[in-house]
Image (cartoon, rainbow, N blue to C red; front, top):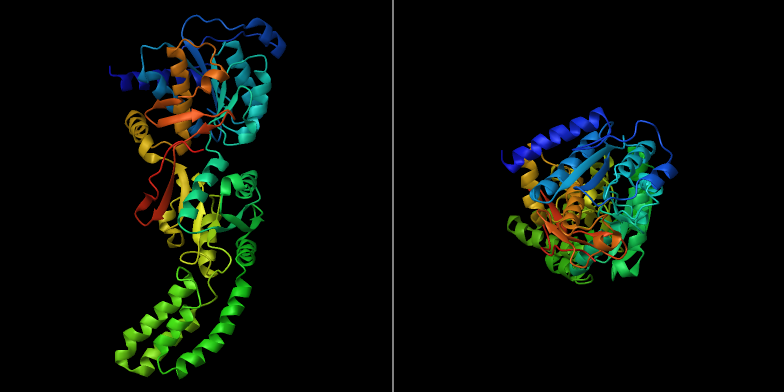
Amino acid sequence: MNWKGMLRAALIVALGLVLSACGGAAVRQGPSKPQTQQQVQRSVAPVATGPMRVAILAPLTGDFAPIGQQLVNATAIALFEDQQTPVELLPFDTRGTPEGAAEAANSALRQRADMVIGPLFGKHVPVVRQTLAGSNVAILTFTNDTTMAGGNVFVLGISVADQMHRMMGQLARDGRNRVLLLGPDTAYTEHVLAALQSPNISGPVQLVRAATFDSAADFNSIAEQVKKLTDYDRRRANWRSYESRLVPQVRAAADPAGLLQGEAAKFAPDSVSYRMLQGMASIYRQHISRGRNAALSEVISRIEGVDASPADDFDVVMLPFADENLIAVGSMLDLYNAGHPFARVVGTNLWQNEDLARGPSFHQAWYTAADQTAQQPFLQTYRSTYQAVPDPIAVLGYYAARVAMSAASANIRPVTPIFVRRPNGFSGQAGAVLFGADNLMRHPLTIYEVTPEGPREVDGQAGPSS
């Protein structure tokens, strides 16, 4: 049997044990009589014999079970890459609840785990940390909540600060440096807002305005927020005033195209207003062969068709969310002359699971995500092994297990925070990662552009972010 066959067989057995009891592959059942946390801590001093024991705390039942199983699957891929290194994978079901996470952590403690991977949710980290407080075992969590990092707890999720640092750098290179932020009133949006307000992260890019909406808000209330944020009413009034002066001048001009070019020269050459007025001059010349009246009618209809002045105090709109409101907000930006080409619409790795190609409003929008080129070997192995496409978060299980495999090869037991922070990091089928002194994992990040054919890499500068 090849290693992929062995992996499938082992995972079937392991997950069967998980769902029927509380253990995993080669799991020894804990005591049947409940023990207090203090009793457990006194009775389970680490014993460096036999295979390294790696506990994974993940939701294996309940609403988040599919994600939990993918994390276990990805972890197993890393463990089976080197069959000469003895490692036991011990999956424990958190059930997606704080109580379940505490019970899973107690099970890991009773099983004398040398390293703990999980839990999935940041809000469950404190109970796991408390349960394992008497141990120096490294805990590698899947959350992206950087406030959970510290001591022996590491955060595997892509941090908002790293994403903003990469995105702001790319926007600055693109000549865009004035940002509007719109998002739901969540902690994630707050983290993005804080990052944009930090000069160390945003660099020359400035936050102009920000607004949030209730997560349960209806379409009309969100539309009103978009209108206010983009200053639509003022820009619309400005254009109507400008139009009332421009149209008579165009009608009376001996050279309407020349007049429009003169108007364009009043704006910066790289501005939307400049390009728009130059385009109208070009339209006049294209239609002059049909006669002056026909050419005037065509260009005036274009002028009167503009709904509002192009954005004059922002050139980027940040949308750090991904739900049923995202496509609608993109359409609203178009409606209020605040999307492409007036401003660059950008987002975070939350967009990865969204089919944005179907929304024309998002064509040429940018978002940050883990470098898919670096992850291709892992993704191919996952697909061929499990006949499924993994969720983007699944790779975190693989990264965590690579840490465990490296520790096992070096006979580091238990896996300590010092080892996790080793300067040369860890590498494997999903690329290279490393952990900083802040206990955050640095991912290979890339900027992707939404196109009708799918995402396209923008900058080609993937690598551990800083």
